[in-house]
Amino acid sequence: MESEVIYKSLRKQWSDMGVIFCDMTQGLNDYPELFKQYFGTIVPAHDNKFAALNTAVWSGGSFIYIPKDVQVTMPLQAYFAMSVARMGQFERTLIIADDNSRVHYVEGCSAPVYRANSLHSAVVELVARPGSRLRYTTIQNWSTNVYNLVTKRAVAYKNGTVEWIDGNFGSKVTMKYPAVILKEPGAHGYILSLAVAGKGQQQDAGGKMIHCAPNTSSTIISKSISKDGGRSSYRGLLKVTKDGTNVRARVQCDALLLDAHSRSDTYPTLDSAHHQVDIGHEASLSRISQEQLFYLTSRGLSQTAARTLIVNGFINDFVKELPMEYAVEINRLIALEMEGSIG
Image 1: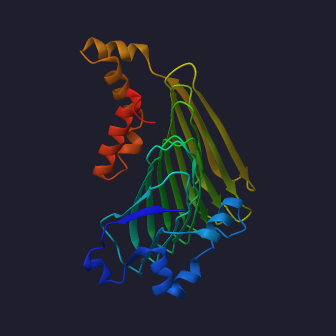
Image 2: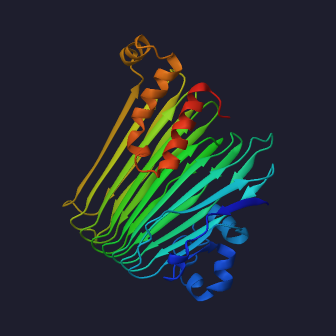
Image 3: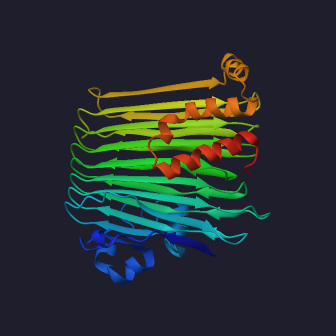
C-alpha cells in the first residue's frame, strides 16, 4: 500500500484564525480530541465492507476544521495519486465546518496506467454545523484498471448547506453515491455529478438525500456520457422520514450516448413517509444530433471537434461550478476522450 498526497499550503491569514488543514495522521496526533469527536460518526466501520477495510488500514487524506464564523474565501486543495501498480489506496477525509463558517475543498485524484488492477477505497465524512456552508469538489481521473469503490457522506445541521461536486473519469468500475443527511430544520443538500464511461468501463454513480427534519430541501443533478460501449448508471435515493415535513426535493438525470453500443441506466428510489412534500424525478436520454454535427462541420470543424463542442455544451452546468483551473482541465479531458486518448 503506497500513495502520494500533495497539499497546497494554507495561507497564514487563515491559520491565524484557527483554520486547520493537514493530513489525517497529523490531525490525529495534533488535535486528538477534535479528531475523535467526529471520526467514524458519519461513516462507522460497520457501515459496509469497504468502510470497514478503510477504517482498519486508512492512510493519508485531509483533515480540515473551520472555526465558528470564519469564511475561507479560497479553495483548499489536495491531490491524491497512486504511485505503484497492484496497490490499494485508502485515504480518509474528515471536514468540519463549525457554526456559520464557509469552506470549499477541492480534491484531484489520478493513477498512471499499469497492467495490474488496483483498488481505491476512500471514506469521506463531512460535518456542516448550523448556518455553515461546505462544498466538496472532486475530479477523479483514474486509469482503466482501477476499481473505485468509495463511501462519501455528510451531515447538515440547522440551516447548514452541503454541496458535492463530483466528476468521474477513467476507472474500470466506479461505485460512488455521495450522501447528505439533512438532520435539522432548514438544512440544504446539493449534489452535481458527472460520469464519463468509455470502452470497458462502468460508471455507477449517483447520490443520496435523507430528509430527517422539516423545512429541508435538496437537489441532485446527474450527468453521464457513454461512449465506445461504456456503461453509465445513475443510482440514487431520495428519502423523507416521518419528521420530514414541508420538504422540497428534486432529482434530474441527463444521459448522453455517443454510439449505439453504449448503455445508460437509471435506478432512482423515492421513499417518503409524508404525502405533503414536494419531490420529483426527471430523466432524459439523448444522442448527438446529426443536424448539429452537420451544422458545425459545414462551418469548418472536424467531426471530432464538433462532437467535443456538443459534449462540452452538455456538461456546461457541471463545468461552470468548478474553479477556473479545474474547468480548463475538464475541457481538456473531454477533448482527449473524444480523441480516444484516455485509457
